[in-house]
Length: 183
Image (cartoon, rainbow, N blue to C red; front, side):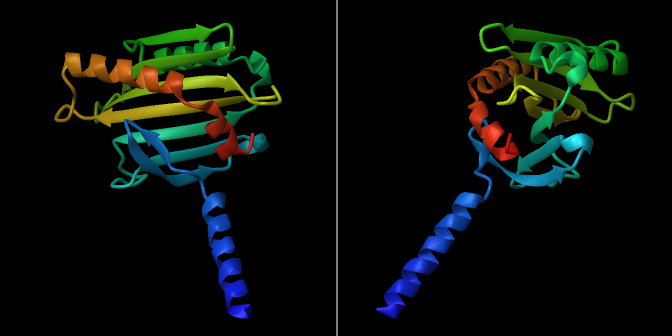
């Protein structure tokens, strides 16, 4: 009887440990694993995930989630997206961005294509911003794709990628982001 009790207890512990781990986060139906947990100042949080076959140092696709306290913009997701658009334009004046705001949910999505001055790679980003559950901060979901001139998609492929990622970002269950960040 003790053996059965020990087996049940051990099984319970394994299940609890599995539940306690971060659930798999996916993009394009592909799982990503947590690779980096940052500790920004002031209680903000950052987690970044890359594909199983890539490293944080050399990735082509990345998912980022963040919690940021941004009282300077009233923790307003639309204003955060507008600020991101300004930062992107300042860093790369030829870059364009697009913002879609949902007034009903107070969420905003921005997407942009940018590149480094060295043109080592081009990066496409989609960010979705939402207020966190207590309204004292903003949470975000980021999808990023890096490609070089050798791996760059055609114009039609890029349009398809953009449409797909915007759709996935809009449909993403932000409760997952809240849960992963504990916010």
